[in-house]
Image 1: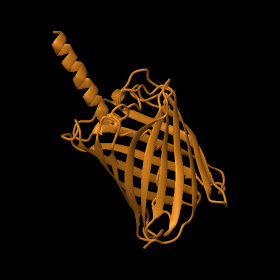
Image 2: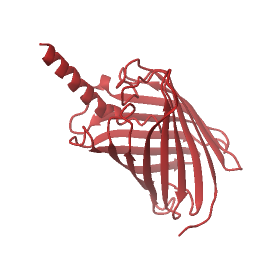
Image 3: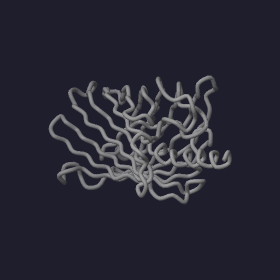
Length: 267
């Protein structure tokens, strides 16, 4: 009886990770269709803090053994514009669990591009390919993951809508035999003035596409945000997120800061 109970508990842990993988707590960011310009470099710090989370690992935004409560995470990102329509980025993820030291949590690399010229179609389109690797099991159970996104952007005057549906697949590790998982990232903004614009951002995941998790086990968040850009190339995005399901952390705070300037063309 005890053996059967233990096996059931273990199965629940592995099943729950499918939905957890769809929330990348190191990067609460919505991408537009446009990319950085050719020869431009962008340095960004993506920060988040779980103000009201879960006390056990593998719950909320925790994908490993550390609990999400009071977890501080930051991703240090460097992006370079290979062309006017293609950019490359590298990330280092660092986290500070509650009561522990700041520590390395993993790395990832991505290529993102835009299709057509802005305004050429009814919507602006882009694409996104990412590889997450060298994950630390205490933060993420998957050794290597592939993420694909189409990017859709539509502007109506000062109103901007960005949609980033996500398709994610574990390539190495205990979940490599599973199919693609589905998640979403979206934002709607009112571009009031360059240095101050309000908006709403949405993040969530349903787990494996062929076998979605029960709604209560999924994660879904809404972030009221303010964002802005200054003439010196500095940009910010600040928001407080609220979890909409019991499987979500209850309150998160995020602050993204980036600096962009021209470096020069390498190709």
